Structures are given as C-alpha cells and as structure tokens.
Image (tube, rainbow, N blue to C red):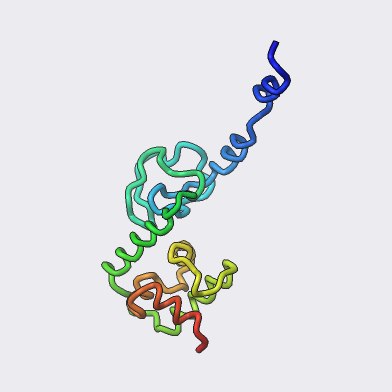
Length: 156
C-alpha cells in the first residue's frame, strides 16, 4: 500500500501548469524576449513572422508565453537593438533634450531611476508610443545608451 506522502504527491494538482496556461495568452519573441502580441493563445504564431523589435524570424509555434528569465537574455536583446539603431541611423527629429525627457518619463513610469533604465524596457515602450524618440534618435544624439541614460539622470 502506498504511503500517504506518495498518494498526495500523485493526486495533488500542479500549480505550475495552471499559471503557465494562464500566461500562454501573450506571445513573446524567443530572441529578444519582448512582447510581440497579446492574447494569442498557445502554439503561436501559426505561420513564421518577423519580430517587430529585433527583426529576427519567429518560427511557427516558437513564440514564448512569458519573457525569458534566462540570465543575460535581455542583454543580448539590447545588443541586437543597439546594432540595429546604429545601422539605421537617425530620423533627426529628436533633440538631446527630447531624448533626456523621454528616458526620464519611461524610467518614472516603470518605477526606476533614469540611470538604471534598460534599453529593452525603453525599446518596448518606444515601439508602442510614437511620441517617444526611436533608439536610432537616442544613438544619434548621444552615441550610446549609457551616455544617454547618464545625461537623463543629470539635472537640466
């Protein structure tokens, strides 16, 4: 006869499955780990598509239900964004003051200090808000994300 601990282990529902099924509504890029689309369900996308953030191909059913918790994953996404922003050049619409204000606003909205704001967090917001300067504009104004963050953290 099985012991009580063995029986309870077998009959107890796994809470991880319930939370994973609930989180499967959103589709995150497996490369840059940023949100592609909300409420997509499982096995998404049905056909391969390009991520609007990193521009890498997301194969059929390869989107993730949550952003990755792997160490360094967001850092590798930042490298993709920085390379893309430098390669594209700037629109030239944003001034240094515009960039500093945008970084401050995004940092404040996310509950962070400007000097701690991650490029991927800024990119996620800039992708949804056309009023924010693009990363290309940030790089055109300051040459690097670190310099732009540092300038945003200093008082005007």
